[in-house]
Length: 428
Image (cartoon, rainbow, N blue to C red; front, side, top):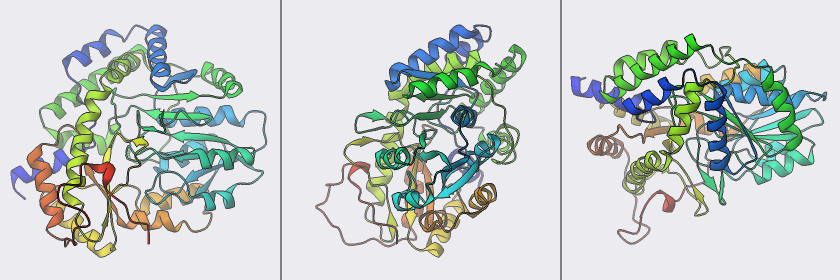
């Protein structure tokens, strides 16, 4: 592989999200000793952004999920949590950490949301909560899941860690259920060195959450300063395109060796809160880049045979954290991944058989999940972040088209205007 190809591989492969410069670093550094004031200002910003009455900030998205589950399990004997079979194993880890049993449920045809028929089968008098996820920046309608869960006496958690700011039917992802959780990690829509948040529309549950969060600690100022320094170094490496070291750190000390590892459950640091508040105000600027890049992929790959591109309902507005593509044939998908990587493009494959086995270990297996299994064999993701240049997107498209045939056009030339008009075929 050439030096240019190696550099390109790092640029495409590292899950960077948000450009953080000197101004943002100063905001975070200045807030290291701000304490509760910075957290309250961040939470006020989140309440306005999501239109919900209650928001609290945490050290991470998985901590937000854990704390929500701890609050939910108080004063009840219910001990099961239905979670997607196509999701990060850290979701299962958070459930187990809360002393509860995960129950795997099949997902919708795009990976987001839950299959309603399987959800009906998995609900029982033991079900405490149902977790439904908005993946890759694409919001999903959660009303069926809420209706089914509430009819069984269970609560609903929207995992919007990958879809911060996405809207569906005029509401932000994460703002419709009993609880919504968010993440501000490096691979998410907005990056604030670390951090997460939990919101709620349920007044009784919000009170219990306040009790649980009142028992949580806040990182000390030394740890906070170390976090700011590490985040500043990472942002410098990203902006200067020295992404090889970033990838090494991401796969090691930054992210942890495994999504199944234990994790701290603390409140949000003041520096993270101040930076998160600043980044929310840049939301439109950041997501416009992602939407533009996703539109290029959608338009250029729409005439390829044997693939499924995202279908976006006119009533929703994704944030395009990544651009997922489903390849109908498993062997063809493997050939595409091989070709892309040979060209220096480290196309990502999320939620593989390995992550599924990890979830099954947590859940002790709960029957087959055919849609999830279909997706984990056939889905790949193209990057949309701001460090992908026009020439790099063109190279990715060229590599993709080099192996897949085109099909006869189904509409007049020039009719495709963006990802909202790309139709998705059903899962076979």
